[in-house]
Length: 268
Length: 248
Image (cartoon, rainbow over all chains, first blue to last red; front, top):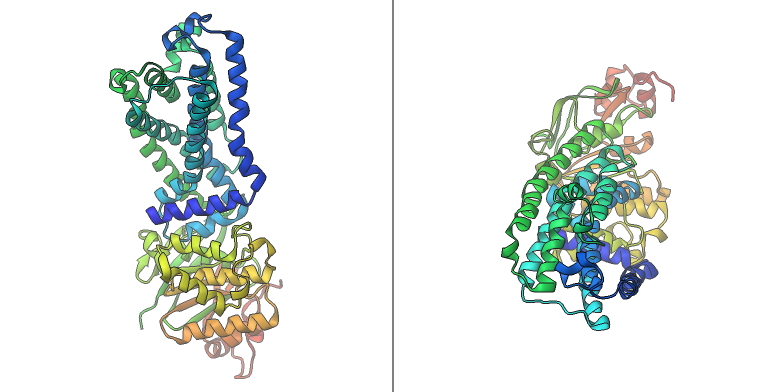
């Protein structure tokens, strides 16, 4: 398993590095996003927004966590379907599936490069925030934070894998990812606290994994709260991860089987 | 000797279109079987069913005793599949990087993998171009890299879909010799499809004649000549046109 994941990582790293400008821009893209939200937070000012009170009153540390985690979720949502589509278009899908690679190494191998790249980006977001803008985060809960990140990825990956199943069968057009990303972006509390939304929308937002990830991350990093004091949020994420992931892998296996029956694995 | 590939009454339909009907045949170790037939006869579908890329609608295939229906993972370990599709590599990676990736999917690693890649590239005449990106390869070079990929894990069963299609006559001869030598070692069963009847006549031990998904003949060239009541000097081309009524 490790050797196969490593092979996928090598493949995508060398492939991405062959597009030198794109590779550099993926890393540099972090900086304008940080600047944008920094200036926005300067405009908002400190302590002027009551809804930010429970997050220390400052917008910049709040939103920096938001965009970093959203970045992670977007990768988990998008990478499976986009790698599937790329494999269809490049004609490599059949060449891979004729080897004894196995469903899990194939799926997770296809996403591992994005995982590594986005882990680097999330560190970069927070690092630049701390170094350039003197944002103060509490790192005492770091191991638990890593665990929460892994749960976030697993929860979002379950939707991403469902989306890859859709691409496998229908090739183009992916309403699932689009809808989930849009709902997370709007209702997850990435750019504004949930308390600014009507109560019924706040209730809907608790169905989305990123809502729970953000709440845990912000309370841990801004207030140094213990992860275990937010067990409801941890359980919600774990539920998504431990139920959603096996279900989505099962759906993917069924989609693969259907494509083999229809003889459409190599179609694009 | 027990067959390494055993097709048992395979049928395949896509929607209302039947592409294979009751195909039963087999290939023994050391044997080269060629599948020939007009376009749309079902040659590629048959190869893809054996390679587990397409599931049969009826019947089953056993590869080294493993069913494509029930043990596809075991079947994939036993086969090397050489696709007719040149668009199956990562064009921005080198030949060696591509082979390393696919070798890793077969569980190969370390010096043994590097040595295997080196010897295969030398065998197919790509030793000097292994570090070049695939996008700089000609169609023929991609084709022979595909053959090297199919042989990476030294599989007992090799499936080749039109293996010499894009090759120059010289390179095609080299690949034919390579295929002959592989079979000559007596361990591998080789199943290939081809439109080149002269090539098949010189290469194949047995021939499967397919037309519209039906077997029109299966056996050695001598057996096919006899079943067509043709003389000992009849070529495969004569036999083909006797058995296959459809004009291409």
